[in-house]
Image (cartoon, rainbow, N blue to C red; front, side):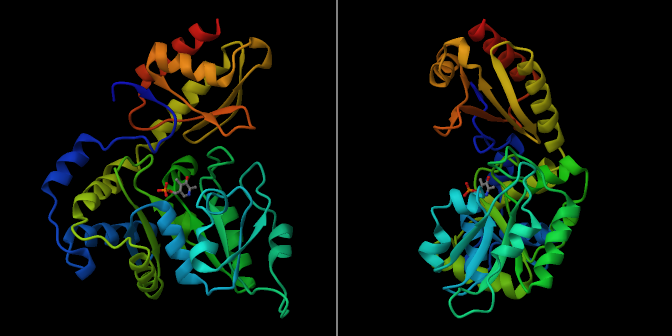
Length: 346
Ligand SMILES: *Cc1c(COP(=O)(O)O)cnc(C)c1O
């Protein structure tokens, strides 16, 4: 990329190996289950996560929605974090398309939800209340700042869900970042879950797509939902080919993105006029000091216009910038970013 783009890991372009694999991909009509590359991606993704089956979906949003539609009936309630992506950033698809009622629980700074809060969110067997069907976790947690949640906590939530007859879904858009952070096999992080979604298109660099995994019967229902949502594709092997490279070559290198995020955060923390709020996995959250007389918008504009570096302020009220490192942010890019920020704030 001719500029340094730290706005998100979603901006990552496909790698040269992906573009080559996409050009060569064997394809077929995936609605007839005829696309060998999609079939291979789904089989390998399921195996990697330790689940029976998987389905290739167009996005993480679609994967989460297919999961909720396949698990729940209209009028049922699901327990989700108040700052979860599913609740905040998927347009309430669960209610729009699934007739599901979200019951939110506060997400703590460590990205967990308290068991007392989860317990309280389960409706009693009372005809006034919707039936509570499912609880969802998010790992890593986006709005918490890329915080990974541990295999131990996930297992406890799994126990809790079983005890209460609830389904556990994990929105694992960045689950491989969490696996890298804890140095565990991703299977351990999702073993307790009935279903999991992960994105091929963020830190894993594929241009398009996510995967939803679970047991065979669940994935058959999810495929029906995907079709109804317009997400069943034809010669999708060109996309799945990039997804296979993501699984083969990109998961084990995510730790480099985490190290680069650490390096960048350390460098930024030494620059006066700037405060690091957090650094987890490939995320950095920082703010400008109030007394430097530069707004976030001006700061971002100067970075872009003078240095070809992209950052974007995060929401209106937080006054923060959230950066995410990825494959295309190497150490020279970090050095350039640090000297540009130093120059602007000096
Ligand atoms: C990005 C993201 C999604 C959705 O992915 P899209 O492919 O953008 O629809 C879901 N959950 C989390 C936590 C995410 O960060």
